[in-house]
Image 1 (tube, rainbow, N blue to C red):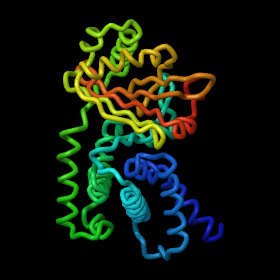
Image 2 (image 1 turned 90 degrees about the vertical axis):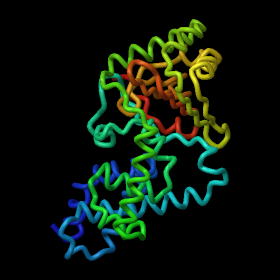
Image 3 (image 1 turned 180 degrees about the vertical axis):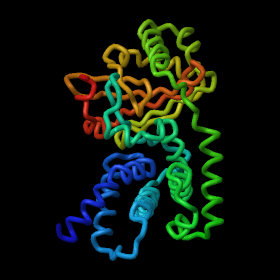
Image 4 (image 1 turned 60 degrees about the vertical axis):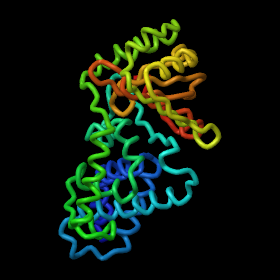
Length: 294
């Protein structure tokens, strides 16, 4: 085995972990794969003979690549962060369960609600939180990536942690109970039963929708407003198929083998506290719907 093949095998041993880091950083499967590929290029060009912990070295490299991508994304955006809705890429699975590759991406129960909150963080805050809180990278290793001292990196993670814990609801763990709530929601939408919908929703429920560049999404708050919108969009329930969305109960609306929309639910204490609806045609076309046939 030559040196390049040996290096490639060592990298492949860490690819799954690196994709998980990049997905949490970017909320995009395709961009996560790009970041991991860039990490391979950097490894191939670097002298790592003195690197004792290759996994740690690669994790910080991927973090740096993702940080640059987030900053570039922010620089291209014209609207203030608070005024836009950008949903992360959903990980779709059949109701039978998550396959091993998807499971690696979702190992830390990274529901869509958490990723939505991560989207609201500044790039450096997101990196410090993801690397430290989700992957236990020491602040001494995070500091040079963000160009701060370890103490400052710790403050970034602490600030992010407060926002995440205050805004990311913790879902009920029982998937079957989640599915009962989702099915009841769809049935009430089909029947136009406003009161039944309100009863299933938390009073402070938040609905986020992302239609992509051509159909800007929006933000709706409150049970009455969300219930009214659900009745208006009841046709979604007519063509929906049950699915797991980032490991939680959700639905995918399909027609002629194509995804029309994905709805992700976050259910806490038996009520829907958060909904995320992806309507972006370009991103929907990239979804693998064969997993719904399981």
